[in-house]
Image 1 (cartoon, rainbow, N blue to C red):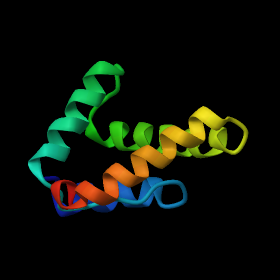
Image 2: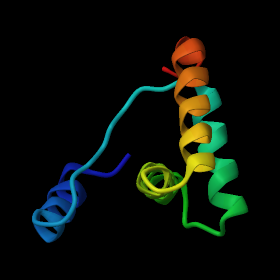
Image 3: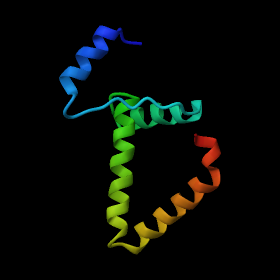
Length: 88
């Protein structure tokens, strides 16, 4: 973990564009993020979270105009709701 001084420096530098996201999730999610980062040539789990958010938002927007995207989004939402306890 970064020192308090390093954290303070990071926050001062990025205060207008970024905020830390500290979440406790199962090891499965950490492994999934590592795999996503590797498969998509990302720079780590933090960027994998950003990428996952980008993809989810893109799918939501695409679903507004495309029936297949809407169907897939509904399937993902249903599956996540059903299996939510595995991921949190």
